Image (cartoon, rainbow, N blue to C red):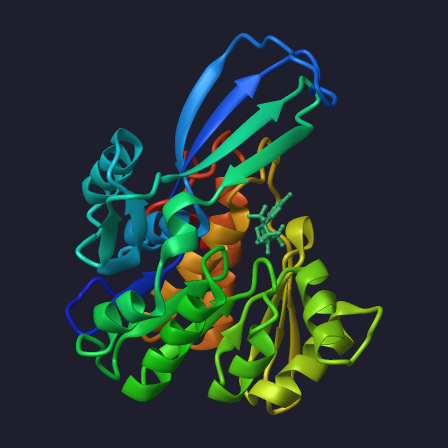
Amino acid sequence: MSTPLDVGTTRGRVFVVGAINVDLVVAAERLPGPGETVVGTRVERYGGGKGANAAVAAARAGAEVHLVGAVGADANGTEALDELTAEGIWVDGVTVLEDEATGVALIVVDPGAENQIAVGAGANAALSAEHVTRALASHLRPSDSVLVSTEIPDAAVEAAVIAAASAGARCVLNPAPPIPGVADLLGYGPILTPNAGECLELAKMLDDDHTHAREAAAAIMARTGAPVVVTLGGDGALVLTPDGNVDHVRPRPAVARDTTGAGDTFNGVLITRLAAGDELDDAVRAANVAAALSVAHVGARAGMPRATDIEVGSR
Ligand code: ATP
């Protein structure tokens, strides 16, 4: 059974390593074809990037969050850091790179909510393994938890997983997208949180081809010796643990208006609850509730719930 989130002082800190972007969204009558210009009406700007989004979800769920990543020395970077600081997130671990632009996602959305996205990774692509190691190695304690996602260079992901393992800290790796280097990191025993497609892709990278996410997750778990949590969109999540147990955490009823950032909410709340001392199945249930709450709102961060909303939604 789920317990209320412990907002006391005994829980560990959460370190999130991942991308920080600015999302520029244009609403248009239709998506442009090659070489075509389509004039839209509404223009919106949202904070984005898997790392930054998950950090916001974790902070709202009650964690002390330290974000590790990179932005450029530009107005987008300043704005991104201001927004994150306003959420109560520590951004000392975010390096500001003089010669890089802050990552930008250019998104066109049509009236049917179909979209077209081009991402300029900018500073995220220049996040170095040395920076990640510096930001984590001398700071991490065994009671801390590290969430890593893969929209940053392979070497930076690897540095984060190794730093967590060296410190004896818990590590959750969200392989979105699965990177070629992930296979080499499985021996460090991270908890993996792929969605169903990423799960199949990851198993394929391990030369273990499967058509069902459950078998693919079992093949991955055989390499990590750690739990695998497969997110299934509106179908909830599958939790596999090394003792052979498989638990389907059922979907929460939700009117999905925008599922952008559902995975980031799930991961941010999962790591928060694990850091607070929850058992994995309780943490997954809370993450499932939080992600279902988040899809009811347009924008990745707009619907990310606070700890009290998650508690109410869990009843
Ligand atoms: P995204 O890339 O859109 O952020 P993802 O592909 O990483 O998401 P999903 O498996 O689509 O991850 O969704 C993550 C979690 O969000 C699910 O496990 C579930 O808890 C919640 N979720 C997603 N879609 C819905 C929905 N339609 N109704 C309720 N919950 C949902």
